[in-house]
Length: 364
Image 1 (spheres, rainbow, N blue to C red):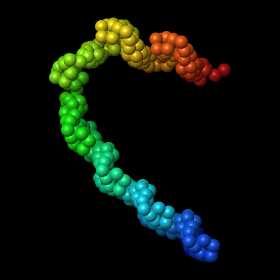
Image 2 (cartoon, rainbow, N blue to C red):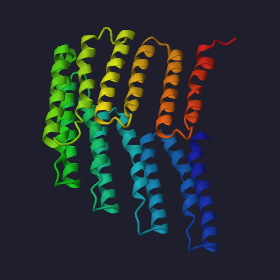
Image 3 (cartoon, rainbow, N blue to C red):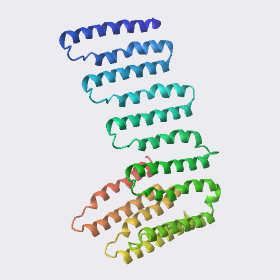
């Protein structure tokens, strides 16, 4: 009987569709609503036949074709002036494409074909919807990273991978620069940042040494100082805010065995606090903006200290205290006549409470 299920599905589907066609024809032939139940009904014999022959790929192809026909029909009947059907049709045909190639373990081929398929789709949508703005290059770049990663994201080829991705990113940004703002070549400012990944990757273990961290810190500081002197020599000396975090790279490398100690963490917090408070009072004494920097600095110190020692409950208590003090200080400085800090403080207190009752405290 199981072998005849597909025959039953064919006969039953035929009579059901014939009945619905008769109803549609005699009552409201001007509106062919039969296509909606027909779409659902015909899945029955289609699934029964493909299951009998155990052809999953054939079922995915036939199913995708049937969905495409249905969506196209609905599109032409309801809104023929706008071909919105290409959006679901694109998604549907990923089904047989991915199934057929993954079953034979052709993952790299899937990445290549899938990327081309996706880029062509975005390009066609771009031409149909907004031909004056070439926005398809944005998703196209993300799609290209898929096959590139499949071929080169390996331990043996990670250096080549970093070079290729950095170069591809530079080309992508250059294209955006050309299409969006050809009169201003802003892509040149990204070259310095894009070079760091391949440089560090190619150096390998040497990138972890103190010598490289010192050279790297000097290069970064020199880049920002030169950029300031060339681009904005008469403006606020913004490069000063970057110097200390960059210097702390070789400092952490030199004391890499002590970076999680309480003495190093508190010393780092003290130095950062004194440095940025000094900048605050020199350049903008009327506004205490340093609080917005001290808050994340304190979180970094607490996170390194407590998480390294797996003291999550203690971390939640101190983090809640620091956060409440931060909001209270901002409340007092910005709007002392309206006490709004109590609202986030109430929500923050739930963190240590939940840690205590569901994590720290043992069940009786």
